[in-house]
Image 1 (tube, rainbow, N blue to C red):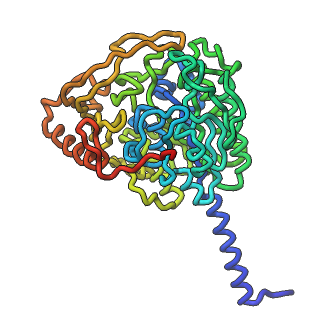
Image 2 (image 1 turned 180 degrees about the vertical axis):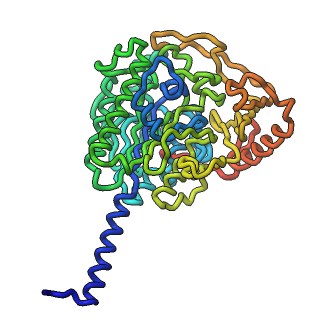
Image 3 (image 1 turned 135 degrees about the vertical axis):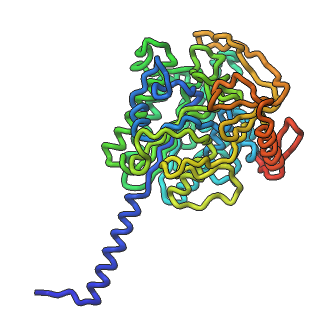
Length: 473
């Protein structure tokens, strides 16, 4: 019989312990799949109240995880909203506004620390499939900002020669693979499933190491496209077909996680960049009970669906009513993977304890609703939301068309401050500012502080803590 000498035994035991810890760390470092849709309305999923759109996979995800009922896109427009998700900052803090067009001289500043770069530093494989929209110059491409792989389009899918209102006003819409254009898109019918296939391949390729997948569907932004398998299938119009195909895509991704034994260790987020583009009528989504839509700071413009799934720590059938925002993802995932935050000042909060039901306390004292270049339109404070005088667009109850061509908005000036209690009046129908002057005063104080920090064009304030957007020389 051979014996292991005590000293050798101790060394062997220490070695096995180190290996065990390494395996545990690898197995417990969660993967992240972040699915971002484009122009999805609050009431466009059956789990959020839709009576005509059937989304069984998203409903299952919500029943097994957390459904956020007061989640806001940071701004009611594409580029600005996406910039906030990836940087944890209000977009006007980092010089972002609106929706960048083709050949823009602007883009994400290389000095910003993106979610992709954070994951990359922690040893994650990273990919973005779908719509980028943070600059189409080579300097701004996703592969230069922490993403290992990219497949998709560099700006909105309507910025092409077939625009419904302005045909031939845009160049060809190119499909990119990594950093090279590979195809001129003239038909987007298969794009949702092509992006899904790329996502599945990425997951399978990286099943042995942690990964961050950012799937940014260009749909249901107009022009609407569904594959031949889904086009006409719902019998409720093309918009419904599109959403049900996105739900099907989600189901395939969730099944891939399960088939590769990754479902116990992957966080999945599903949300939208802003509310629906109501002027497109039946080619737009629904805000349900909420007022107005995309392009406004009223509830319908920025309150969007958000479902978060992680069975290991998020309890099933969790409903979260705390006001949360797109700026919160960077600090939250930094906490999850134990990463340092950016040296740049950010605005988001770590919401992990809210998502996992460890606290019911609101992480934000207030949320700030900016639009245009840098105009503060409103502030949410607890159950209350106050709006400041500004000009906004509305259909005034008119119904849009059913052929993918928009109708024109009316423009209205909000002349005085207005205050609403969103818990009692979620549709923002009754201005109560005269009844609650102390609440209005408190919100005004918070707004003035934020104006001094990141500015407000409506008051001619530039802000002392803003940063430059990326620029081409």
